[in-house]
Length: 273
Image (cartoon, rainbow, N blue to C red; front, side, top):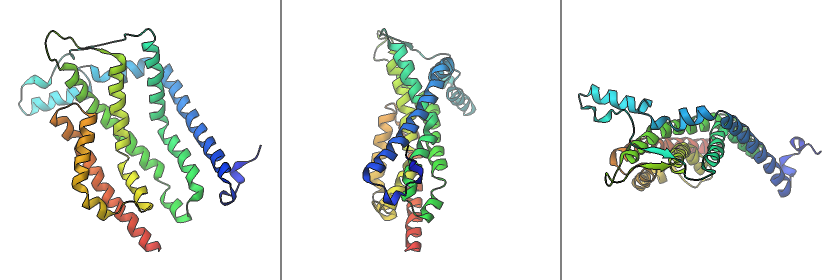
């Protein structure tokens, strides 16, 4: 078998690059599947502790809100013993299907740093020596941002959404009995969406590198970015103002950080030109 690692990237054909990309993708998928298998085996922890954790009244977010309300001297309206809804499966293979796809989602989250590593290995040969030096922390920074977003989505967005939607009733004649697909879909969407949104500074870094955005552009369209942020907040949170503000604040902070990063990139490009 031909050793791809010894081929000079500058002499590789288009098909050679595709072959190289294919193996990076395969290794990334294998890593996701390995972590997904581990999540599949640890069924009790993944579902009873993680997935259904925000459904329990003793979830840290609910306890924190309750203690905060008591500290401010409010009533105990933010404190409760149980959430007024149940989760059920209406399909014959519903629980097994959910088990599979939840394990794959967990596998992707756990293997995210390695997936980034394979992506970096693919693009690294095309980088200049000084670019490689500055990109060494790429995997660490991206992983930290992603996991921070995942934690934010899990401990803030998910419980707020479940608490609001789980207790919402148009009439006392209607009982909230959610299908397991719907419940887990909400948890998955909140966690993955926040994890990806928190990658905004990295996205702006690369867009600045290729010349698509500048600090001046980001400043000029800041007010439009605010509108987009509010729309995103409305899409991944329950329809109440408090939840949307809670989501919008960190995104706006990330946007301001992106402006600073864009300035640094432009400054380095001017210094090297």
